[in-house]
Length: 308
Length: 291
Image (tube, rainbow over all chains, first blue to last red):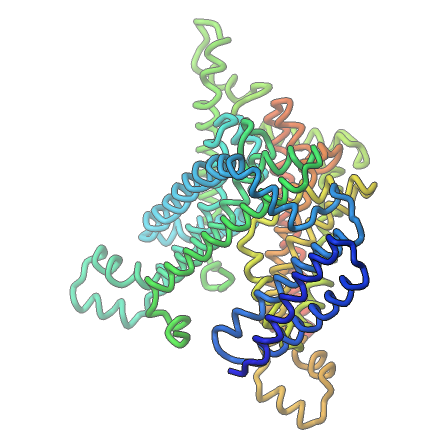
């Protein structure tokens, strides 16, 4: 790999930091000069990395792009004195994040550790078990699957007010919304996965006189794993959305959805953005963890075999 | 789940399942509303009266299907379409925002996908973020967008359309990038030997080839746009729209109203999906039966 993009990136980051510092010192001309150098150098670095191969270059391009966007956001918001209630600069969001760490952790525990995890486990588990239960009945499968697809395509978060009435204001009502949201994708995908095992393999199991249970355990469930993981990954995002939106309908004085809606109304946008950061981190980290687990467990699948 | 073989002969099973669900619903209504009825009912009330009462409460825990149907019919047919008492009016408020958002999403998604397919730097730098952003609960920003835009004096349709568009734009971008890359390299090379410009390759080969990917993305985007519009109606305590009906119903404990609004949202979503499928069928027909 050529070294040039790396040097451009280093130069760009130094110039960007310098520009930010010069702006605080009110030196407009110097700020502009440093900013121009930074944008030019980071752009050169990105173009260079985009042409290069290898995991480092593949990672470096989006990272530099993300940093560039964050930095532009910071510089433009401060430079043009955009009102704080419109868009706080990233530095203010980071400060709010650091200052309200305890509060954010409480919200996270309420929304994620209670509602999301309980609802996700129940919803995915129930979807999986129902898929197994209807596996032997083609009639039920033909009846339930179109329903499942239809319900998956509906605005399910709308049931949140009903769940709040049934299960109270605290996290169980949010978990219930998450259960309903995650159930159908899991049901549909597991059923599709159980149909995945090929005729040759199924016939082979039959020549071994394998029972239904053995075939399921040794052939059909492993073959269904890629589909099950698809549902697990999709549901991890859905669960977080369900829990956060359900909190817009009423909650005790805790939770990420509650924080976002009340602080937005009070114009404390830095805290809102900090909470959104927590939600984004939670969402992408759980997705990433599931993707990693998928790679470890279904390493045999064609979509992974070629890549590592 | 679009394989025709699995849909064949599904009519009867679906009808049976729906009937079973309605049956479970009625039983559930008895069980859930029972305690409240028992508190008020006289000692010597017969079981028949008890059951009928659980199915006709004013604010039931779980309204029976016929109560929801009656509320829907009452709302749809006794008030004019422009009256806020008519659910169609609220559905239209929500749908118009969702459709505007879908339009924004389509324009932005197409533009971005074309850019990502043609410009390598964009592909390498932007695409990972587009994919990563799908794992983020973007719906969480809805209240903030509505409040901030409201502060700027922008209210009504636009903030809702912005949220709908933001949600719907990701699946369209991802689907279109896949679709624009779908053509065989051989075909692209063939067009190159004809000295075709990049925009000619785009319009003659890449875009037609991407249609098969566009419509599945559009289905996902349609649902997301509707969800976005509904959720965007919550934070302002909006006066109109299906989300506002849900919120109002939840404030005043009007369960039947909530269920009616929910049912309306489900029907709207299904109609939207049907519209996408119809467009797909029409486009497929014009192109000789397949995409």
